[in-house]
Length: 102
Image (cartoon, rainbow, N blue to C red; front, side, top):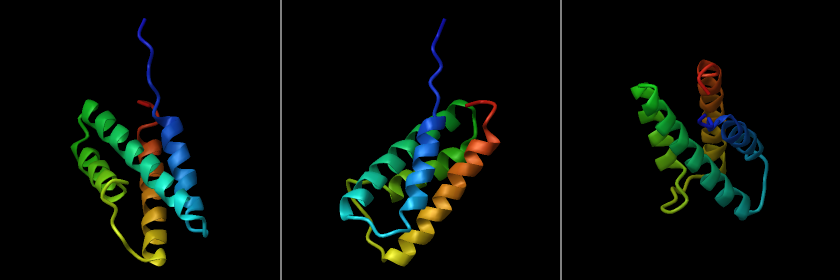
């Protein structure tokens, strides 16, 4: 019997961290946020590839690039707040649309 790996906890953790990111935290929180969101987006891209959802693969790939902690993009706090909420919503939509497969 093969164990099934669930990406649901990673999605939920990312959503919570993204929504909390609209509040002021030390810089280390945002570095952790980038790492968690980047890894989650990579997992979701791989998961989407496995179920032949090409649009989700590209979308999650772009999110992973955008939130990568190795070559960070620099925007203002207001812009990041918009991006954080938008990505949290996208992760929520992904979770809702794929809840039977996850």
